[in-house]
Image (spheres, rainbow, N blue to C red):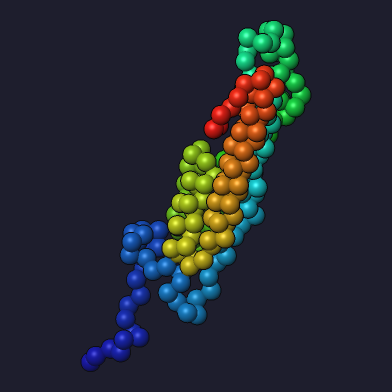
Length: 186
């Protein structure tokens, strides 16, 4: 007696034991409900990636082009012990440390939504952009969407770097003009 196709035995292998390459992404089933790729933790990482640019912009603006021979040791020490310098460095360290906790929480949230193998949280050490590239690749593979977080991260990184280097250019060119130095094509 032949069995209809619907009477096939159901595999009892857990999803975690199945290799990733043999799993079907969520986007293949038209009626399957897709988990949301967006978490508040991922958006917080995007916002926190602004902090180093703001901090470095301040540090660059206050120290760019300084000729240390023009300042006494007390004046040099005053620059790095000012409250604004401490706040700039503090914001950079806060963003760095908080990103680790947020990346771990983001991975747990994605796992609870059914996205297998989210980006390892330790890779946030290489920066928000690298982490979001991997996160987006994993989420896009299984959910079929989630590029907006990547594009927001990329925009923050590009605009932040442009602002920081633009500020450095202005600081160096202004410093050179105050000394009477011609900056030429710089």
